[in-house]
Length: 528
Image (cartoon, rainbow, N blue to C red; front, side):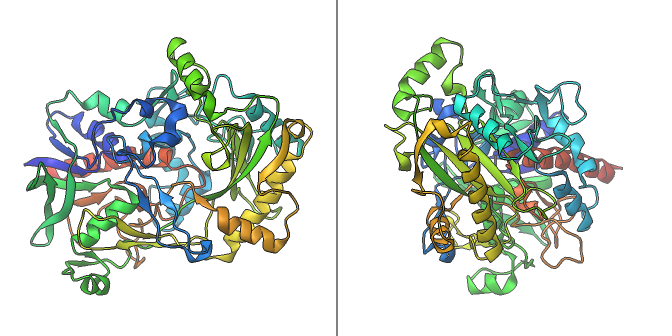
């Protein structure tokens, strides 16, 4: 019997394993579906695109998306200790301050920006010192790129020429503007929660880690959830928790596990042949994700990063103490932009990459990409079950572009991005557009281009949303406790009521840090 069982050794799970076991009186079992992060490519920043569709990726796909002409979209998710923090693009972005104020306005007391800022700071050791917005002693190191590619610098210059302000810190006093992204990289090496938080806790005797484990369902004892059933080493096993089960499996796997356990919309569970134990209509609903459209250009001057040069980059990396192009996460510069004058906060995010993707000739051609990301999608979807077998992937239907405003915002963002690329600072460095193959698309051509090209930024969230008693779709309360029972908490991106305007690793770190405090506070209150 353990005090706590953590389901999922990803971004949040590793944080909790560290923070809870800091008290030697607390015993924790950490269960992870993947294995150890032993692939060399995990640690080398430039290699992150090579990790998808490998053993460290769940290899999920969406259903056929009506708004994308029936296309399915890959959904990369980390299946390894460290989770998606081990396979993502390492961008340290928190979102807009008002995102968290909105969470609090919904009735989630303690989740305003002022409330959560200390937890953002607690998680990090930032290169930004003597700054009220950043931490200097946390487990996760955050750095600036010491030598961005020339094209990345020219993008910032061109964006400023187009009228956008320079922003030296997207996580500081304001978000709007263009500049260079901070990264979860330290000394040229990826920083994930396995090699930071979990590495600190591994030697503690009160932490047990089991990998290559498939959690099948939660075990009920009367109305309380007392344990988990999982498959490992060719047999089914049970594990019991004295205090709590903490679900950290992510926005896709956590609702799947709840549904398989009979927790979710009762009518849907009946339809799937699962006995409804707790009727929670919001489980698997409210799926939100950031999407993007990539603009690709054939460049000149030999300054972009070509895939055929990868071996040279890696040799330089290993021979110079992890320096050079291979120490780059590729997404070096970008910014946060308002698509219209009357938009009060950024609704677009730009990602500039001084390289082409494989679909545009990355192996042979010089070029760059400017991705236009949708920060505040109005299209929401669902996560349900394909089958009642835990080994099968969940049914993921984001319903991309089901809201017309999303299409319109992306179109405006593309026009603004093309204007940046045409500025004198960047124009001499490219020959012609690759995708789309020209500027000045008509409305119908732009519509067709977006539907053909739209991809995910792999930020799924919201499927077990946090909310007050008055919200019928709230799955957890403001202390992340599962409604309708005791003994379960959810700590991952699924609890987000609305998606933050930016990348989601930093927000999940914050959520897990705050959850650790709440869990320990509640345990102390129970003892007293």
